[in-house]
Amino acid sequence: MIPVTMHSDQIVSAHARQILDSRGRPTVEAEVILAGGATGRACAPSGASTGRHEAHELRDADPSSFQGRGVRRAVAAVREYIAPALKNRPALDQGECDAVMRELDGSPQLTRLGGNAVLAVSLAVCRAAAAHRGVPLYAHIAELAGSVPSMPLPMTNILSGGAHASRGMDIQDFLVIPVGARSYSQALEMIARVRAEAARLMAERGLPVLLADEGGLSPGFADPREALGLMLDSFGAAGLRAGEDAAIALDIAASELRSSDGYQLARLGRRLSSAEMAGYVRDLVASYPAIASVEDPLDQDDWETWRALTTELTTGLAAIQVVGDDLFATNPGRIVRGIRAGAANAALIKPNQNGTLSGTLEAMAVARRAGYALIVSARSGETEDSFIADLAVGTGAGQIKIGSLRAPNGSPSTTSYSGSRSRFQIASTAGERSRDASPRAAATPDTALTSRTRRLNDVLHRNPARIRQLFRSPGGQQHPGRRPEGRPHASLQLPVGPMPNLQVPDHRRCG
Ligand code: PGA
Ligand code: ZN
Image 1 (tube, rainbow, N blue to C red):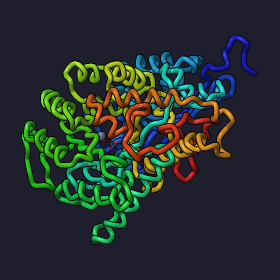
Image 2: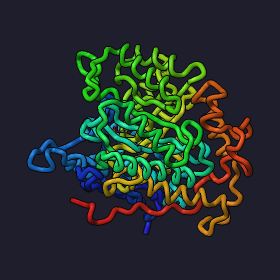
Image 3: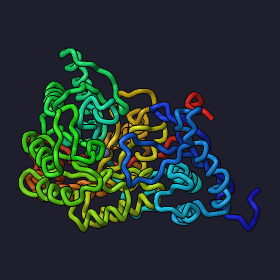
Image 4: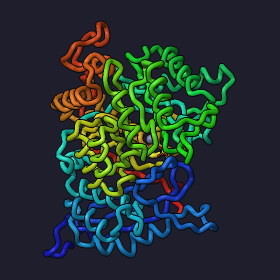
């Protein structure tokens, strides 16, 4: 029985436990229970190429347990501080719940309670609220964000280096963006083809086909141009035209390369100044027209060079997407600074960099208002929690960055893709009148997708020819033979039907 003075969306308890992530390292899972009986559960992911400006990941530093990586202090923070502070707070008021936790912590980077503790609870509150309302998670997020849901264009790891692959290559991620896909399911299939062909070509050439942290292949090339060549060969072998059907995205993760005396490209055997690093990236982009997006080409605090390189990469015929990840750290203040400085034209969005869902939505709103593109992203250490799939759809972010199709058990690909797949596949088959689709699907208008695509087009690349080439403006001019009939992106529609519950198999629990 709910006491009469209590609203059914009020939080009655919050719990947390230590679980293992896809790298076998501890992380926090939180659960929030409401007076009306609804519950929400969520897990904090964890990065490896972690930026200096992210929310603090609280770890135990006890060498006798998980090499000091235990999160029992973060779990205790939920039990001893967060749960009592959230008691009786309305889960429907995400802003209030997040503000209570921020105030309780009192530090900008959540060092006291731990960003991992706060984020897991914040996302669990959101899930509980959605369950309480009986609406899909993406729909609840859309209301919180005041946005129109839409399907994202995925970018997915094919080749990995940097901190995710024992630094076997200097550049961290070589990703495919299936820019020519007409539906999410077609996008997945194109990615799978590229992934399979890359593995086949590598085996044929006697290269190791070991999996990196996110499930990308790690050929360990000394020169990034060899990796770019392999990407193009894989596109070709998959029957895809480079730059037309499939584009390349790079995450250089340059903060990881930065040392006191410049950028160390250890595998290439070169040490570069800031200006030389910018020149190096510019040359790569110029030599490979299939590169459509470059993330963190420079260090997180190299603002002046960021500004200059952004200007070079985002103007003219070869304008591309320039993404700030460590640079922005999903921090509204840093995004504002970047907007003023003219650094990047897109923001990577990782909720655990910020620490709360409200803060993440604020970061997205700030970036969006300035015309920056948004890419919701997984971390290299993931769990079964597919919250980011709903976040990408609900906020109509436009793009999602996820691990590879094949991955070590439970890595971001498994996580984000199973999340994305179950949600997005339903959505994409809906347009094809699949048995899986609810009757509502047929009535779903295309307007959201159209606005997503239009926004991407408007925002990412100020050059219309390049825009059409990359993202195929619906209603705009199309390449002959590209989309012979039917509505552009007709099957990229909204997810429909109830979202599956978050499942955390018992074998992945450790506490
Ligand atoms: P991370 O890598 O999760 O290890 O930070 C992802 C990225 O850099 O985008
Ligand atoms: Zn990155």
